[in-house]
Image (cartoon, rainbow, N blue to C red; front, side, top):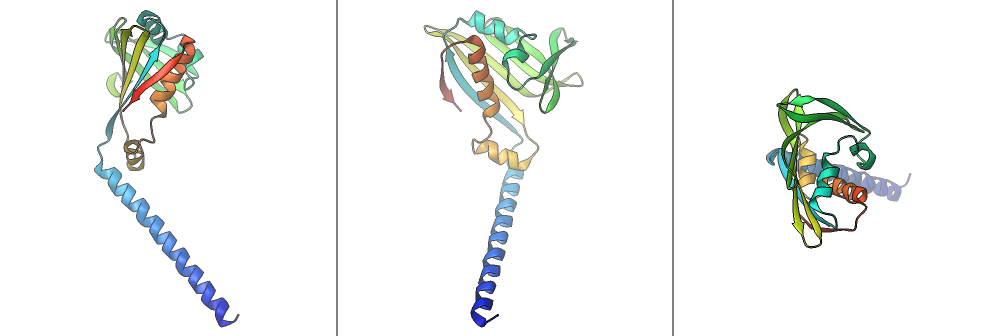
Length: 185
């Protein structure tokens, strides 16, 4: 190997070390930033559907029909009521989670929250149904928590919104309606 080849090899090694060091520094900065961010976050999305609030309410509260239109669910298992309110286990790709109706004001507001061993927890999903001239404005607000520091950074950068957006897409598909996403926060 002549001196030119050795020089090229040395330069390649130096660039590789520099790239590895830069990547490690970026991962460390993201991790520290994630630790500094609060674990809880709130996401909101709105959609306008051309159905009355009563029709939207019926779809949201039909537990037996949920696996038929929600793409994130494989099955629903009914459970005994928690504190006199309906409860069920949602079984999806990531396993199962217990959900209960925390508040139901037909047909205006529905609050569903996770329940761990009978205790309320996160995520909490709030559905506000507002009657408008063209149908119903559906506002979905989700309050959730993430223990993963990298996921916290991703959420703050807007990269983790698919859950509520997918839910609204599935709801619009179930209602067989035209939808317009109005705003997302």
